[in-house]
Every structure is written in C-alpha cells, then in structure tokens.
Picture 1 (spheres, rainbow, N blue to C red):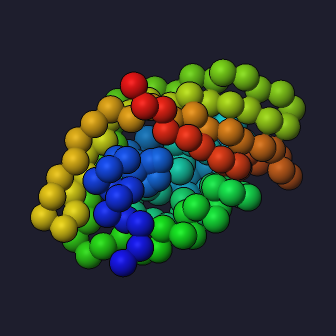
Picture 2: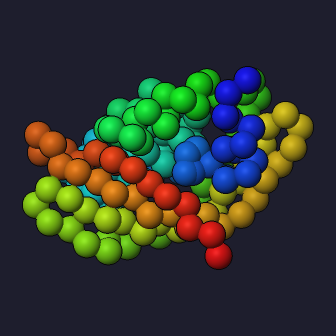
Picture 3: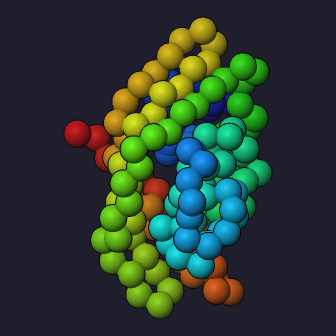
Length: 140
C-alpha cells in the first residue's frame, strides 16, 4: 500500500493529492500550461480525476518524485475539489509562487475526508511551459 490513504484522507490531497474540471490558462488537464495558474489548475484537475500520469505531467524535480511515490489510487477512491482560489505571490520570467486554497472531499477505504486546503506551489518555466517544482501544505 502506498501513500494514497494518508494523502487522500489526511492531507486532502494535496496536495496531492492532489481537481475540478475548470477552464485553465493554457492546456488541458494534466499538462503544463503557459501560465503558472494554468499549470496548478491542470494539476488539480488531474488530481480530481485520480490521474497520476496527468499530475506527473505538470511536475518536475521534487514534485515529480513525490507524485511518482504516491503510486496508484486505491480502488473506488473519489476526490472532489471545489472553490479553488489561486493567488500569484510572485512571478518572474522563470519562477513563480502561487498560493492555492480549495475545498476537498475525498473518499477511500470506506472513510471520507473534507477540509479547506491551503498550499503554496513553486513553479519553474521550461520551454515556454510552467511546471510545479515543489509544493507545501499550509496548516492553520
């Protein structure tokens, strides 16, 4: 068993784990986008779809390793993400920091989890696309 139970039930997933089908700034779900906010939305879309490959496509470096370490979601798992708010904390030509807030409802192994998630995403630009390099859940 991998980290899905902890991620889904404890962290509301990102963090990861993890996304509502929203219109995003450049690209479909599970792909790096032409804006930092678009990549974070695509990552959350892939998370909600329990699409580990889509989540990985939005990541590079430590974030990619974290997604790969998650393994596949448990059978019957469900995630719903809503009320997403993304704020650009800083952005240069090659780096960006995005604060994200969203509601998550997750179900796995007969248990459910519901919470408001606060995360910070650090992104880098590579070949005209933004990739998540790391992210942290904020605890309030």
